[in-house]
Image (tube, rainbow, N blue to C red; front, side, top):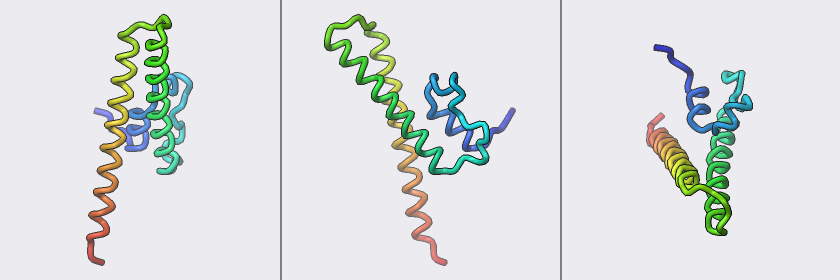
Length: 103
């Protein structure tokens, strides 16, 4: 079983399909900083939210959009937001735990 480093695993989780096709993941994952990875992840969640909002608006305006595409985009946006919130919660929890440590 192949084991990949955490930077490439996190970028695979938070990258959108269009970023994967366009080579959006960092080829030098070891050189990517945490802030770059975090920014890319937040941008990906934002793009998914915007895409879902656009499809919902088109559906509400009566444009030719399939309902199943709208529902799938909304669920993808919801799941990516929940994943981002859980990562944030774990990071805050880790920070609080480090602050409680005595030096």
